[in-house]
Every structure is written in C-alpha cells, then in structure tokens.
Length: 139
Ligand code: FES
Ligand code: FES
Image (cartoon, rainbow, N blue to C red; front, side, top):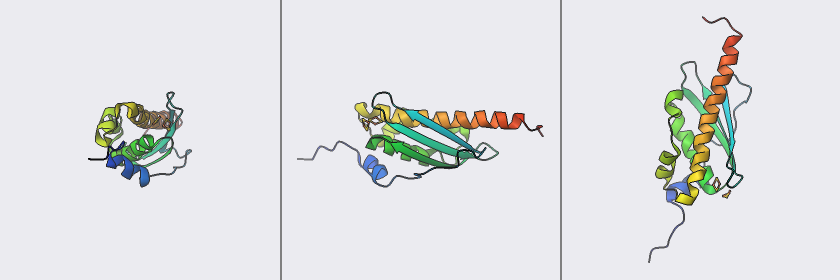
C-alpha cells in the first residue's frame, strides 16, 4: 500500500532547498519590504522586492519563521514574481500557490501569508517611491 504522505514533493523540495532566502537592504529606495504574520499560528514571513524604474521586479528575497508550508510558499512566490511587473505580481492569489504546491486545506493560511507578504512588499515600495519622488521635481 502507498504510504500516505502529508506533503507534496514540491513542498518538500522548496522546504529543503529554499530559493532566494536572505535579505535586501531595507533602506534602499528601490526595495520594498513586506513583513506579515499569521494570527492562527504566529508564523512570520518577511519578503523583499527590488524594483527597477519600469516597475519590474529584478530581485526578491525572503525570510520565513514558520512551518514547512509557509517556507515552501514563500520560496515558490519569490521564483514566481521575479521578472514580473508590480501590477502582475500583485495579482498573485494564495489559491494559485496552494494549488501549485498541493497544500491541504489546513495549510491554506500558510499560502495566504505569502500572498499577504508580496502585497505588503509592493505597498511598501509604492509608498517609498511616492515620498521619494515628492522630494524631487518630476522630469
Ligand atoms: Fe506555525 Fe505551523 S503552526 S509552524
Ligand atoms: Fe502557520 Fe503554516 S504559516 S502553519
């Protein structure tokens, strides 16, 4: 009989070899930082994006203090958003992440954390950008 596995192999793969783990300089005006927590379990995820002048995500890093599914979700999201425009990246849904990683229903909030983190990083970047350009005369 087949062994019932709790996690899909993609989760294990991202968990064991997370992509893009680390940090970007928080004070860099081209970097947006999202820091979010899951009230259900207390897990925390930090996700950072570096954006070029065309609004394209050129680099992305994460640090997650949480369960395997949360780590796998953040690792997956970093790969997914690299090279995307901010508008495209902000459309990523946690259900896409959960589907791709075959997360079970009890682990849906872990992928929600990844959606929240990318949205919050985009928001932070845009906020920074606005206050930054407010100090400079526009071209
Ligand atoms: Fe938070 Fe999974 S319950 S680590
Ligand atoms: Fe809470 Fe996964 S983020 S159990």
